[in-house]
Image (cartoon, rainbow, N blue to C red):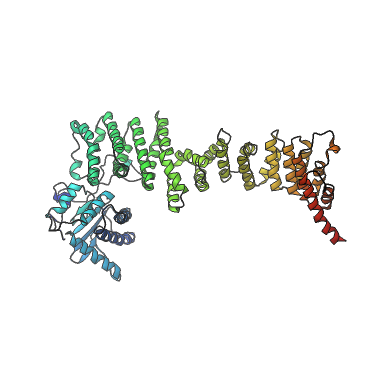
Length: 623
């Protein structure tokens, strides 16, 4: 049903209500001519508006279908507001104007049809013009579109839209404003809080800008606020919550410190009272005025309190995958923290503890889950958010590498850690030699070689570790690095008094097979009294498989009577010697094994018989 135009059409809603600037007052032009980028976005905004007006008649306001189109509408509006500060659609006869400019639809039949449909929509809802300001929020869009789905069955009161705007707090949607040059007090930019100091959020109705809460009523206003905000959310009036919050910040700096702190306490208590979904809605409403106050507050202890509250909001934003908002807030927190450090403020350590504690708790869990997700978009957003935190995120990244089983998450964390510089990598290396669990050491080892090759000390500890998983992880690091420096470290480790470390070095050298290493391994085999180290040497010599190794291997395969001065020969050592000889393709090795075809040890016997069987065809062929 068509809604009649309100009295005073052609004026802004605020002006018609007697709250805006005088009509005689010149209004500065806050727009510039539309360029190609704006013209690319405008049709998308029009399509989204038309689609929203249709969908709301089919589905409830809180349905997924409506939420999807509203989020699309908000995103396209935000794209436009990155280029312009105001967007006005207005009718001039059968022509649609955008910010006072006639749209050129010549040669584009689809665009002409869209323009006609949009004009029909304006006619249907009884408007000559519809203006969006750059502070538009999802709450105000929900209110506006929700009304479109439930227009009066009969002609509405001429003041319909004006009353709606006033009651619902639609301060970023202006109805029947013919002159689109609206004075916008733009108070906040994502990267420059200081520029907004002393300027009110634009969502604040102009009448309230000049009427802050009287000091004698301020405390009572705060006392009633939690219940009022809760009721407004339940009644579906989030735009009114925006107004209530903005009014708190009018002239707040003129109040004493205790009262300013009480405001922070009220917000904390309010968050505790609201359900999780409303907490997120409230966080999005609170964030802009809170960031402004955060930028202009001078009392260090209160700044730390505000940082703690902001960190709580970050957790909410992360939980609901609002990563751009979370990144923005964290950027402001980091900026203030750097100011504290530069000024050597006594509260710096407290500030740092609050920052780290908040990120290492619930928010970290959400981020880790997204890093582990199979969804590339979620992984990218989480990585982007973590990457925007600077040095403050170092403990989080190290903890992910140390404790998470998911290799992909640890690899992403390692890449982010590398960008923090050498100090970050050194902290991870230092962790390797501390009292952490074997499982954690193994996880770090799986990642650390991608960050640095300077790992001599770390490999020294890991190759000699009692835990087999840690040693295996260290072997993989050695194989991945495989350069002359690593070979030198391993040769040095051969001389270690720790048999386990020397045995691990032997195992690595057997796999890498650097030139002439067999001489070092033979010398170690003949000099050590540790059977496990001898076994490692035999296996490595078998991998190298050079004839030079035969005599030394045979020595440990000989019967005990030939070595009466030694303790009883270890059966594992004999089996390792036999196996190594079996790997050497040389007649001397085969002839040596031929003596043991009837050995008492079945393992040795089997190896010797296989060697003899392999050697016989070769001899026959040679004859």
